[in-house]
Each structure stands twice: as structure tokens, then as C-alpha cells.
Length: 298
Image (cartoon, rainbow, N blue to C red; front, side):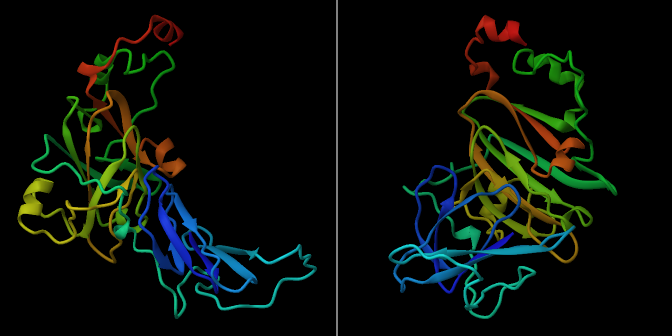
């Protein structure tokens, strides 16, 4: 989705992640599926009517609409749309001359916080695949629908042995975890948006082609293009890079400090319902004793 406020300017704050911002001026913001942004509008221009334009620019249907932001003394009533003013996107969401777009790679947490440095304790490689026309998976295998009597993994972690090993990973509390997402030639056309639960991760970067090394740290040491381990965005939604051909990748890093059973999955409901998920067994050795009333409830 593309959004703009014309002819005024926007000051983006940050993705809605409870992190305070550094501000930048822009004209157009692209909002991928599953992501949230906070936007400020400085009222430093003349009191007037400003058109808010929003356009969906992805299949299966292109749609657009508008609203009016009006600030001035008193109350005004409209019986017809206000006069046309300068637009920065068209009805298809395409940028027009003079548009200044948000570059999401410039998002910075404030106060500044850097990702953990050094080699990761755990590297998880996940392939994004489209195995059939309507089948989207992680690592080529859909997470099956579990029976109603399946004991939640939080209460019985041993139950994970019933799942394909390609669909889950366990690691200790305090681990530095890297996840490398790789989309093949078919999957990258739609760029499934992935969501990570339980913790926000540093979005280290994206690139085209296969990931250039066995690990993130090795790629960083080799000065791989597209990686930022100094001041990357801190997010919970991720896309691989858009590319006209071939494959693409994205890399994220986080410090596991909240013991739980959680997962990373596609934010698109049909893909999630089809099993496009991967389970993370995080630091269960440090998990507090679960109260009996919760165990009995489940």
C-alpha cells in the first residue's frame, strides 16, 4: 500500500515497535503487508485542506481512495470534494515527479541500540518456496494442522518430535540467533511478508541471488553487499528483496532472552493457513514452572 499527503510533507517516526524515532521528511510511504508505521504531520504550512491518497498497488486488485486533512480556525462543512492539489502518487500507487519515498533501511531505533556482535550461536536457514500454485511453504514442507488433542508444545516440548525436523529449531536462552531467509525464483514474485513473534529482530539487510556465505558473520567479514550489523532497523516484519529474476535473501538477528515456544510465519492468511510457518523453541531450559491451573486448562 502507498500513502501520501499532498501537498504537505510527512515526518516518519518509526515502525510501530515501541522504539522512539529519528525523523526524516518524505512525501510517500510504502506499507508492506503486516507492517505498521507512525507518521507525524508538521503543521508548518498554511492552514488549508490537504488530500490524503492511499493506493493498493499489488494483485489481485488495484484500489485507491482519498480523504481530506483540514486544519484551520473554526469548522468547515463540505458539500463537494475540495479543489485538486499536487499529487505524489497516481491511482495505481506509482510515484509521480517530486515524490520522496521512505527508505525503510534508514529506520533507526532511538535511543540507539546495536545488534549483538560476533558470530551467531545459532544460524537458521529458511527457504521460502511455492511448491504448487496455491501452496506456499517454509523449507518446502507445510506445517500440518495439529489435532485438537495435541498438547501445546509449551507444556510438552517433546511433542515437537512429531513434526518434520525442517520445521523447527531449539536453542538455549541467551543465544545470538541469525535467520537467513531465501526466496527461490518462483517464490520471490510475491515476496511473502514474514512475521516474527515474541521478540523484535534486527533487520540486517536484503540482497539478490543466493545468500553469499554459510553464516551472516562470515558474509559480514567478507564485506557482503546489503548487510548492516552496525545500526540496522529493529522490526518484527521482513521481506526478501524484490528482483526481476533469480533468487533473493534477507537476514535478521536477535538475542533470545524470553523463553517460549513461538514461530515465524507468513502474514498472509491463506499462506499461514496452508502451513507457511516455522517453530522456534526458545530457551526452554530457563522457562519458569507453569502454574497448574494453566496446565489443567489445556
